[in-house]
Length: 88
View 1 (tube, rainbow, N blue to C red):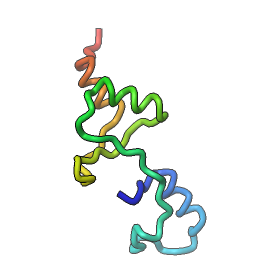
View 2: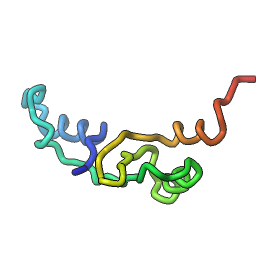
View 3: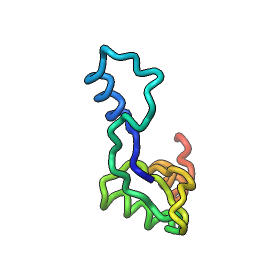
């Protein structure tokens, strides 16, 4: 995993290169944000702590071989830990 393309990255690129037609530009031309990755074996409670300590909202999840298996968010984990919240 080389990094992440975020909304902020895309916005900055569009602002800097507004005169160009970027619809066909390859992703390799974008500046990537460093990725804080999470191993897939963490318990949800530990993963929430990981998010808190690292000030993250979401993170890529890697398997034991370093392959990307998905993305997870704080909201996904909170629902796993607490269950779905039903309106009163």
